[in-house]
Length: 418
Image (tube, rainbow, N blue to C red; front, top):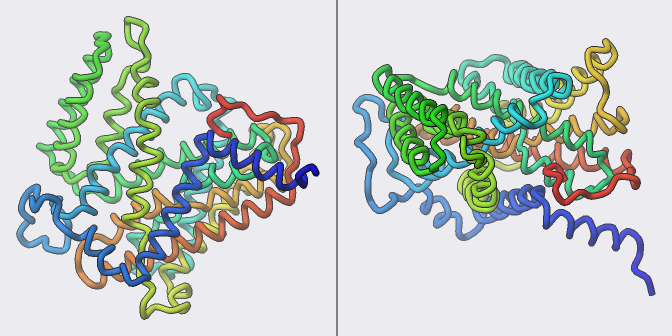
């Protein structure tokens, strides 16, 4: 007896998803769920104790006197995850952005106009919603940028579950919006969550100049670039600018193509993407997604901070992106993504409200330190991020599942947005 069509389709989509980059998004969803379960189980003490424990018992440098609430040193495993391991994540983001600008979706002005317009609106609108819901209260202002980000892996993982039901042009649109979103998020971190120190920054600029000179000279060996990247990380870590910015800056200095014809940037990207997707991001997600709900109850969902973040992700993202796309198309500034309907564009706009990785990261920067108040705000921010991302994922999937059907589109194993 033949299998039911829906079962055949589900198995086929899962096999396609497992082979595709989008599977990393499903892994991230699973990791987030496990972190939440563990954080609210009998193993909670071990979970939180693990990431607050010292790594090898070694402090990177002593805490700055008079600044006891600010984590200025790497003395915990969580610190190493957020300030060291995540540099790899941002390095891969930087490589991807540079490749897209030089030879990808952002290289053609006509192709990049729509996602750039959508991404800008999709960052401004959530911040506006957050501000309105939070009432502009001073203790919440630092979290203004939390709902502005989109998680590429998570969003593409949801799209991957739909197989070819989502048209390729719309999948490409989502990916490009998320990439531009990353650029905006990195800029926000560099500008608003940094306390720069001139001499260290000067040293960082010197390293960047050295990398630029090596690239212009056509040096094809990766080793000098790797050594200089590590040096840049150390200098930026001391500069007061968040250390992860070093990853993006170093990536921009990696030559796209060397004089001997080798493609250093693409080689590095291909080598690091699996590690980034299946090691770095899941570890970060597991370390940061867990929040204890003990004593909070369902009322925590309606507290000002989680409500403002969730509203920014669920309402702000979809309204900002969909309105921007609609206006740009109606004003004939750009063309609508090929083979896409307005309900489909709405569904993808909703998916952009999945802010998981970058939102969690910005949340850690927005409310830093070991003070009880900061810990409480970080936990509330996580609740808002997880709630908003989950609602956006379910709602976006449902809309696209009900409105899309493109049997004429074929899976392309080489398509990065499948």
